[in-house]
Image 1 (cartoon, rainbow, N blue to C red):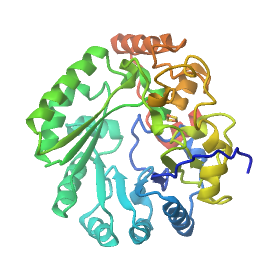
Image 2: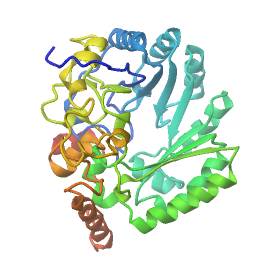
Image 3: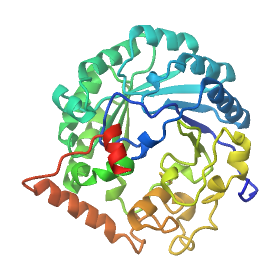
Length: 375
Ligand code: FES
């Protein structure tokens, strides 16, 4: 395969199995690619089992079943059982839509370790609007069932301008549902969220207020509930260490079998991301062009190459650099040292102007019609 052979490559630890792009919800911040509807094929059960086996053999220990909505795959219990037999710690990342008590029992028996349920807002009206599907009551029932069957209750709420004002109610809802873990994930602006950024990006004041409320709550529930607050990098002056460094820890397999160093990598030009139908996980991880592309530090240019923080943040996110500056080798524009840093302020100003406009354009919901239109 056409990649470079690098030494000192550590094995993948985290495998994200995106089983399908099918999803009954239509969230306008979905991290699936905008053109997801053009990728029709899905790996079959045997392909997935082979991928799980090969990645585990290399050292992967954490496994996330995600999508789309992974519950739409009929073979999910079989894959969970396979993962359990291999010794993975497996996590189902789900909207909860379509999850029944019967399925929870089935997945538990198959050996699933962890279920993370997402909820869009603290009110039925807003949840169902954002999800594009009436799902609020069902999600709350699912949260109770997850707890009833002995799983830790892990709730994830993606935060953006449409729901950030509900922060106190979101926290109260998590408490009422008996959440053990609450992930408050400020929207990351890729894929559909990038397309809807003017409508989703809150102001700095909104962020700061929400963070203060979450922090106070965190202290109040210390020892009872763990809160993870995923910071909004548009209001930081140093970039996140995306993927903990390219090709060091995370391996994502898309529904059609394309192996990705991060969930957005198929949108970067010239990577030639390999497919698990053609290569083993070991070949892909160690030898492929895609996984070696931004491994290490040699690819960097200034200001990253001489930056004394490069081993901490790895130059930030390659996909964000490409989306915001058109140059995937550039420093992540979030960084105040980046020559493209002004695009962040422009994005913030544009979102603010959109919020103040009388006729704000509508959200683009993630569905196959919009996917084909925008592709
Ligand atoms: Fe691709 Fe950050 S999402 S490198």
